[in-house]
Length: 376
Ligand code: GMT
Image (cartoon, rainbow, N blue to C red; front, side, top):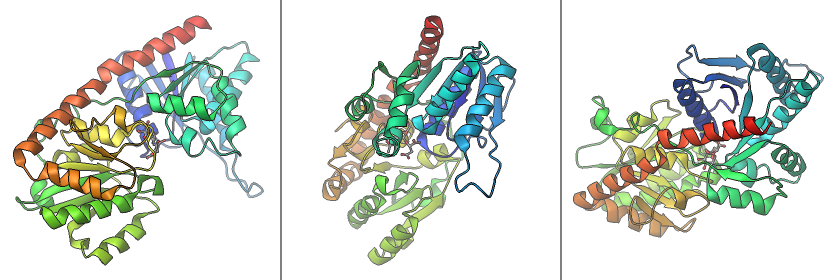
């Protein structure tokens, strides 16, 4: 199939999933066209089967907001015609599903029919899409998609509860390339550079937005490091960063917290981690937790949204109520205080991640494309 993929090209989970999906589909013989405003961060390799088309939005001083949707719709029309793209898969409803619908309508005028598959990722439903300013357009574009998928059962339920949805929503969970996150494959796992031999390494990866509750990460770590010699790796950049640095300074733990910024080497960081913290306020899936588990890192998380579908309480880690820092710290200390127990949780985490093997999940998207094309 010739598949157009629209996504955010940034470090966010939706862009990462879309990119990994495109790369795997290309390995399975499909021709993939990424259409977005920057080269997706995890798209390092452009091959025969993988193409990247940049959406340019000319700056015009008259406009307070530059019309990205318009530029995207036009680019989709042009690329579908030029490359005979058969199906468009848009990740994140806003504004991608809306722009794709406009492109589809323009193409129908030229007797070209391109169906749209929309994948909902979370914030497009729970945080942003639900805002009254966007809701009518989001509802419309979901209902006008030829197929809709959600990355967890919890997100499907949220979508049906918050929007008036007329079509079916298929749950296709996020997936992971288990070979890439196989810590035994790393010869350069530079643990020694990050911590002393007797110290445990705790990691948090996110875009440091308020929804991630990074303050809880710090407060959990503060309690843990009092009992267990440890270091905290904070990976990512975002609006909470300064506040977090100030909090670390106030708590006197700045020397135990390493700010690693944005990284393309998540697998390498996870290979030397002992525990992962994800105390989010809301999380439709928690791709970062899955990446940790695939690297044999147990997860201490909140029990919100789709996280319980990924992290299993008492098996791959522990779940606590949002904001229950004491419980999270207690569970972290329980795992880290006994090396045999830690090893058991590490093994369990990897085993749980195997359920999200890309070889199992990607064919589900292929089946949806085939069904959708057959119906058109
Ligand atoms: O929350 C983020 O960090 C980014 C956001 C996105 O849209 O890229 O992530 C959402 O999609 C991910 C991939 O499907 C999910 O793993 C995240 O749980 C989800 N974030 C939220 O629901 C807050």
